[in-house]
Image (cartoon, rainbow, N blue to C red):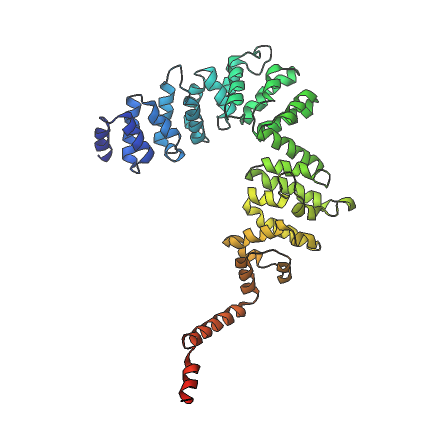
Length: 405
């Protein structure tokens, strides 16, 4: 009944009023009614607002309305459709019930097909249907000027969209196995791409010995390509004093999800280091590159959960006093002491370690109280005594003057 009442009230609302309900109301019955009304009246801006709000779009009923609305839209599609489609793909991932409609939307135009092939959340069956229907994986049947390919190049050149769908990457890379100088792959290897797709491209270039493809990827300035190339070098060569800048540059581009993988390579290198790299543990905290940050600084900045891992690493290499006295280690301790989840672990370090560390007065007090809890009690007692005496600090003068009269 509440939904029906809400529906009656929205029939006379303007598109702006409906959009406002979707963007600001906490009443789901109102939101449902507004979306249903927008669907009936083909009001695009309401659904655009829905797609910008992942929390609302996660509601299956609203997602279904939105997908149905996009499915019935006709060409030419508005530029806002790009973000709408990407929002829907994110919300529908892992739910097969929407696959048929998503495929239908993907096949509306070369533009929508290109978005589907680039987006990481597109269902595999949609990717396969697009490529098979258009024979995109066959170089002789899909020339460089294919409309879908042109849109993929356009989107990765002039928007912030990158190629993140690993299924389409693996399917379309079969072109270069058939024709090593394939123009489409040559162009796309220079475009904006995510790390997974870039890694797939790197693997293919190595497998078939395609130096031109590898050169394209090494020169590619997109974040995903830089990270993929850097991580490949770290995986192959580890870390040593000669390539530490490669590690620093790679960390600059890394997101939190890749930090633990990079650190695993670093730990292996430290365990297997030779005499020439005896100072490697120290360099992880002391050496700073062009960004004036050490490996330790960048790791904690990207993934604060790594604090304890780095502390344990320092403990294992505690024979190196240069680690304990480094600014990066002091920064690590400062961040750790401010975080309730890591504070107690930090305070388990040997007391003498804190003599090497630069600390704020607040942190110094935390450490002092931990190792000498009685000092805090004595200080409080002294403070209370001083307050007590201070309140009557004229008593001795009064007593003296009374005896001199």
